[in-house]
Image (tube, rainbow, N blue to C red):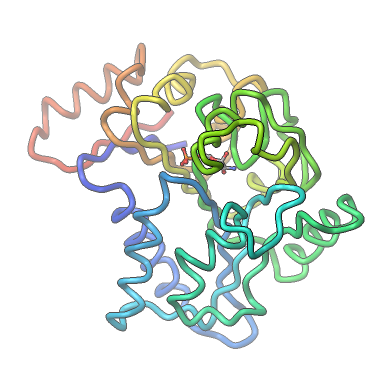
Length: 270
Ligand code: GLP
């Protein structure tokens, strides 16, 4: 995998990358460009720039199909804390993505496992995901795959860790007890099946999880390390998220910074 440290806004970098991928793919009516999409605070800028690109005529979503990575169990789509609401507010309401091409798991389904199985099938039916975007939890989770999740896991109902509910309480009036106990989430295997992966992490509260990538060990206890097993994965981070990196990865980055002090990004293969 590639670790990319950026001094510029990582949301802008990601939005420009997505724009190029969609444009290079080109519009064909039978083959859409399929994106895996995240929620969370880290990717808000990315969505803002994608909306700007659409408004200024630089991006067309008519041949894009999207699959969101997760949703809380029990929240209605109209609930401002649901990921349905988040997506509508931050992307879908502002761009020309046809409604039927945007998929989000239904956390209110009467049969949650059936909902998850149908989601996996829908991803297969459209030919798989071209680019899976994501954020990283403080405990290294990917989507809602908490520590211990198998790297082969697929879309399923999951129980949230207390630390995740604490971290996400900020979206629930700061009240951890209001954060749902369960969610539906694509699996780590679902993410790894994508042709390409771009995950983002910013801020020093993510530094501990990011640092696991510099320790060599690939372990289900740190789902973020699953990225190392994918042939085309990038983790894009800002400088605060990089500050606990260790060993050879740290050395390589420092050497690059010394060589190219004016550069906006430094990357290292790990
Ligand atoms: C939630 C989401 C994850 C996301 C994480 C980080 O737990 N399910 O997909 O990566 O939040 O969110 P933030 O970017 O707000 O730190």
